[in-house]
Length: 352
Image (cartoon, rainbow, N blue to C red; front, side, top):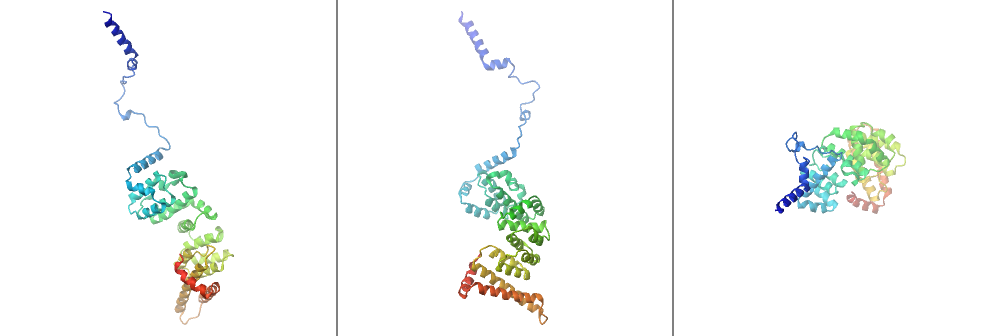
């Protein structure tokens, strides 16, 4: 007779010690009457963080990485040069964008790779790719400060290829002072420095080439690079300014500048870029090849001048051309013996 009441008491004790019973007693399991439907709309808003876009970008990169085909794994394992060769062959803008995310998600997006991607003519609308527009934010210390600046310079060429002059002007207005500082400290290679000078004089420093040669740049090398990006109409003025400004030029450099002042042309610009008379030391074979090319150009110009003058009087420019041909020949004769000249002439085709 005592067992049934005893069991009832135990059941009540156990029920009261059950956490759910206690929670129900405290009304913690009952939904407030004024609460709406259980829905995400009633959930508290997520806490925003300043780095949320960056984390979202990383998550997107992770998704790209996980969904990438097996071929991308082999691409990531390739040598750097092979990766660059692959990028240059891609002809689809979407694929190029995918490659930006792929390499970035694996911390393999080198300055050279991103340059190859961006300068690929099929890479469209770079302004819509956040990483391209701000490598410092997305890549941070994966690159050095100089590499970030060099990529800013690469974008000048991309904006020109894409016919976006306003982006070129904005880039130069924001960055030219830092570019010029690097140029004065000789921390930019000729490739990057030529890009800076080309778009600076085309877009924000019109007619200033001679002024920069005479008063801004201290290095003859920078003056040569300005000459190499100048329009033919300006080349003669720049060459004459260089002859006035720099008194320690080599005989070969002076001959080249005299030739450029008399025969300004795209061909002289190409000769300077190819043979680099400003780069010391210049091999004998390279010097002779350069002088022979200049002789050919000046002699042709002289023949054209004679034909144009006809039976008329010889003008001052005609006399200067004759004198220049003589000086070029004397330099070549003094620089080489007959045997050396033959060897140098044969080597001309091998000079790059």
